[in-house]
Length: 573
Ligand SMILES: Cc1ncc(C[n+]2csc(CCOP(=O)(O)OP(=O)(O)O)c2C)c(N)n1
Ligand SMILES: [Mg+2]
Image (cartoon, rainbow, N blue to C red; front, side, top):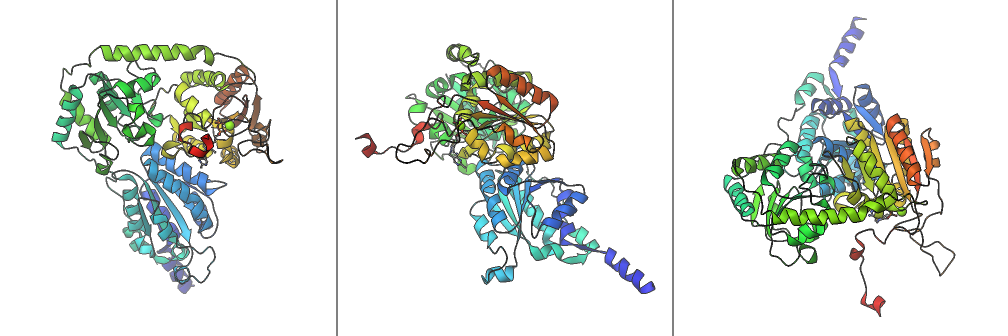
């Protein structure tokens, strides 16, 4: 009897890998895990849930990974994705690479098989050298072999994910680690609470001065706000900088809403004019990649340009064109230093410039207005988006998730945003498949209603997660712009009985899919019907899927980026 009591007491003083990982996550405020269970992490998920961590179980790791990546963007803490070995790991890897490319902090934690067997390639269950494969696709990759190193391992992963330019981190957790036992006190001591995970990076005073001199010299200045600016959560300071400078601003897709798209200085509806005619461009958390035509060529016009760039990553400077005033630091610190340096009487740009932009903007807006009010059935993009535009205006704190080709490009231009970090979309890669993962994480992380505007093709990449949305009863309303295919539903294969590569089953009823899981399905054939259905969904907060029937001929090839399709000289003969 006495012996048994001693034994129990001794056991109580032990801990294991399972619990140390959970304790380390919680100690660092990482309270949500997005993943898919299986060997060797099934019990870990159960234990994490029992400990109060929210465990959101998906149908496919890629969607869990996208959820984690956008959780990182929304919270500035690494989003955590948990996968099983080899195939689960690979399914999560696309999202890890996506997080890195988009500068979102994320940690992919994956179980892995026995090192001794994997390294001798003896054919273990789900054998794969995961660490080696992950390395090329993320910012940092670590493996923890000893329970005593779990604390340090997670600390390293957190710091790597959020400090400097954020990105994806891989953390390899071999099956044996979970069951490793150690003294509970020593275990608790081994955990690390990361202090100041993303330290401020203060820009050099000379760099700030140089930038302000260039900006002041401008006759036609422009500020471009990227998703880095949105990530920074320096919203008030960015707004103050824009307003104090009087400089027109252009938001990139996920920078929309930092200042409302209806702000008098917003040049969103005069994009081509401002890119062509500006003489000084200040980039804030925006890169001169393909989305900005690399800062050169036809889009940017003939007039010589000077670029000021604010970015946390020094290597970003001169990546595509010369940056005459690089300001390296975190965006909050940089904008704050610029504001301080501007002093009390910063001169507004010459009045002709904002006047020219306002004229162009009004022309473009009034050209568009009647198209947005049409009530055609089947719908075209403008009729459907006109309705959604009003709904977002009336519900500015809802989160808009958007993917597709025409569905993306037209929604981006038409739907005004009013608050920061409310528009989540395909990002740097123009990736299809982020939809349901983003919607789930947005609902979980913010508690706000989510409106997903999805091309029918785009939706297909993550469509099975409507079950997840129903299971967790999330306030998500999915609108599918169903034009029977990719770009259009009208392609015909003249050479065999197979359908053309870009078309789907005609007249598909995606609304039936959600009904299978107890959600609300609606088939909407006109803008009026669409409006009623979306408003009902947003009011009720019930998982809803609306099949919006679009004219199959309404879209254009590749939406707005058809020019990127390769052309052969031969084809033109
Ligand atoms: C992962 C991935 N695979 C494929 C593509 C190529 N792609 C670009 S847009 C698109 C789908 C466009 O169709 P849809 O979502 O129906 O939008 P629509 O233009 O018809 O409104 C595809 C497959 C991609 N961007 N990402
Ligand atoms: Mg389509």
